[in-house]
Amino acid sequence: MGKRGRKPMKSDSNTRLEKSRESARQCRHRKKLRYEYLEELVGDREKAIIQLQQELERIRTICQYLDQNGVNNEEIRQELIQWSDDPDVTNLMK
Image (tube, rainbow, N blue to C red):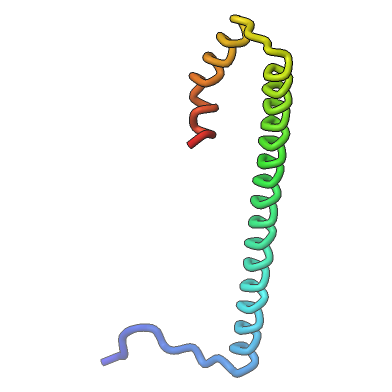
């Protein structure tokens, strides 16, 4: 009666060593890709933060101008009401 199943491959130490080296190279490559992705993600978020800071500064400047000049224009008030009802603005305030 014959034996069932696969016969174990006889692999020499050089083959095992090369497989181990290849695995280590692949691991280092995946790690490098992860860090590149994270750097890109952080860079994008930093750009978004800078844009928001610039927008906030513009709004502050407008508000200071309105405070100094005592402007109580109804159109400005309506624009501010619409702006505060904007869901994108509301989400940023949370």
